[in-house]
Length: 367
Image (cartoon, rainbow, N blue to C red; front, side):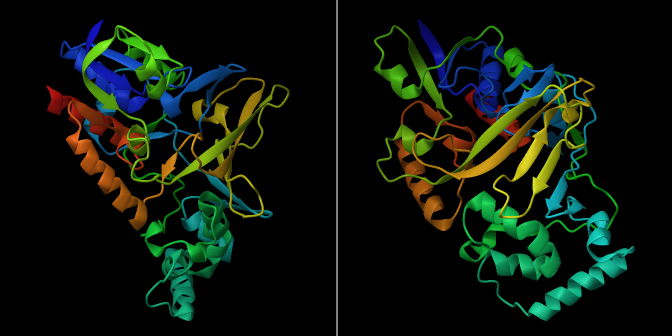
């Protein structure tokens, strides 16, 4: 069998690209090392609830074109992301807003909140932040940093904030309104019935094989040939790490079914900001779709160091890794008829809307 494109990765990037190329009359063959399609946005039904197996995925965008595009494949509800943060026995609203500041300092007005933050920043006298801790303190003061930033960030990166570069926090979203909506984007929601159905529709009429890695695929004695390759896996892995290994952060998920408990935490996402609590957040999946099921399903999310063989979730975009990625990019430019896409192929973190936009652009460029 001959295909115009072999696509490695049945996640959002690869699936959007495959859909668009099929629409243009091209043939595609899609493979994925996991036993299912949809990549990290895969959802599965448990206790009648759409469970996000690889962590919470909340669709949000300011791009009207992307919003119209994704809604061809699903009806979205009106879910608004309003996470809660737990610090010891205290509860705070996120993002940092007037509800947060009122709880912190027992104040009511934006002027009081701004004055409190400014006073704390002035007391610290940090002129040139040398690390992430000093950067965060210089942006938000000690109380916000100590209770809501420090422990959570150290868990995410597996390092003390004083050992992390300042540029990782370019700004902190301080909002002086009583608004708990985490995103500023005008379009936001969760697809009814989960994300997997979207990818199923994107891949309708396209040949797909799951449960096989790219490395195993090329070793097989098979009759499949193709004109071009789209590779959405790790770019350094494609080149067998010949220049060195890029760094990633990984995640571990513990999902628990609670058939006798109707409502575990009252919110879809609750963050735990103390470093002593090993997980960063608990997700209660039913709240993404305003579920009324008699039971519930929760997932605890644990950040983890990445090593070869683990699932990479977040690229570590520091100077060292960016230099190494550029070197791999030069090698990629010498590959004939090979495209690299997605967060792993392009070594950058993409929100879902940016993933779609990038895949649509690549498909357009290929037309």
